[in-house]
Amino acid sequence: ADGGGPVTAEPDGAGDEAAARPGRSAPHRTSLEWLRERIAARIMAVLPGTDGAIGATLLVGQSSAIPASDRDAFAASGLSHLLAVAGLHLGIVVGLVVAATRYGLVSVEWVALRWPCKEIAALAGLLGGTVYVVMTGLHLPALRSLAMAALVVLALVTGRRAASMRGLAVAAALLLLTGPSVLLDVPFQMSFAAVMALIAGYEVLRRPLMRLHGDGGLARRFMVHVATLALTSLLAGLATLPVSMAHFGEIQPFFVVANLVAVPLTALWVMPAGLAGVMLIPFHLDMLAFVPMGWGIHAIVWSAREVASWPAARIAVPMTPGVGLATFLLGLCWLCLWSRRWRLLGIVPMLAGFISPFVVSLPDLVVAPDGGVVAIRDGAALLVAGRSRDAWFEREGLAQAFARPVSDLPVAGGETADGDLSCGEDGTAGVCVLARAGRSVLVRAEDRSDGEDLLPEKLCLGMDLFVTVSPARRSCTGVRTVDRFTVWREGAQAVWLKAGGIRVVSDRAWSGERLWVMRPGGHGVPNLPMAEAE
Image (cartoon, rainbow, N blue to C red; front, side):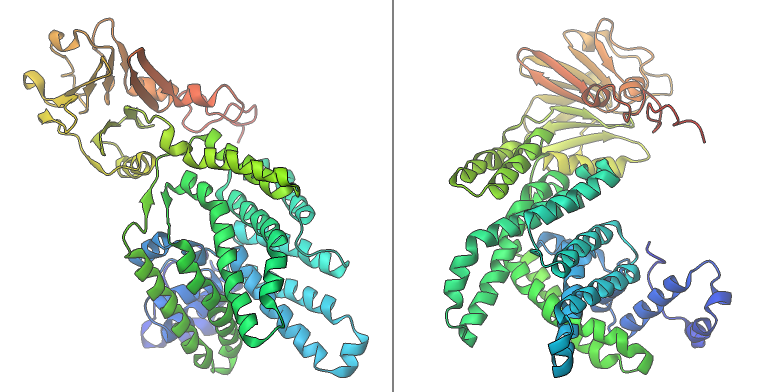
């Protein structure tokens, strides 16, 4: 993605020859893509391994060379946002350009007395941020952040507050007008929740921070700087924690510690050195900046690995119901948008949304959207059986949704830990019986589309539901059946076993009859009038 795969060195000077003839050697690539690849190749030549891969990610947006183990460490330590070019990186670049431009202008007395240095520096910062977004691949989160940065610059130029709830509301309205579906996207929810919490939090904490600043001595300023970094990580992390739980199914309890080390290093060391190195490439002096940048990246990688190795650094969380996430976000808006004491009432819905994943009843049995995989909840584990093209993907999704390790269903025979699931009865391989809460479900966990799908009649006695991963040409007489045809018509199936009966919910029933919902068996064709006109 983003203009090419991992950057590798070309033998015998082939890379230099290709660099001299970008149009002829790679006609399918644009000049911008060629430039990004050349910069990434230079970074990785100076900084081999993980350090160079992360440097290429931060400066040109090419992240394909980062090892999977290090990606996992960054995710476990709450630092994965550093590997996705978005608002944090753009803010650092814009801030650096603004500071350098303004300092350069005010250093000349004649210019400082006659020119609007603050406004010029803000416009220069926006221009630098635009160049950075283009160089990193024009990713959608970065473009959204650039739009918000443009509003901040507009506020600075017109003499308004740079960071305010009104400006945030304008940015959100513009994004929603361009595409209302962004409301459900992870970047939109996390970025606006974090910025809203930061604006409201620093309004409340302004006076305590001023008292901490005191006379402005070096020690006092250092204390304010450390406190600001910690508060920023804490406010943004707490505001986005339930969003992360809902979309990624986990909590990183030590994210504040990791960000307290990594974010300052990124802002004050890595990014300034990296930008300087890019500007020094034409003079063949880039090593003077890329090598120090590598020291900072190495420290960040070390901190990510260290925090990820701590006990309980990554806690799995069951799937969050949509109403739970909406309740939390509404409570967050109440807490941040009001200024009176009743704003504290917003903490109640926030807590309710936070604990919702832990109090909602999970399904006892799930049939995957392709109908070829069935999963049964069994205590602290999730037992999965069946084969399909996307089985590996379904297993990962089910493990995240249930916050349980996935293991194979013992279809050949035997009982599970809870004792309410038995397989291989009467020598019928691949057939299991789930008996729970006074209800019974017969599960055929192996595809028998070869025609041998007959079941012993006595297995069907007393069953409330028959579930099979193959098309059921012959099933239990008088028993409700869920098979591949059912899934093809109605989507994935979730089953709850209750003392009062069995509840079966399909994806189709859950989504409802709406224009954007895929029609039964449509394989991705929504119910829109022009959907089939191509």
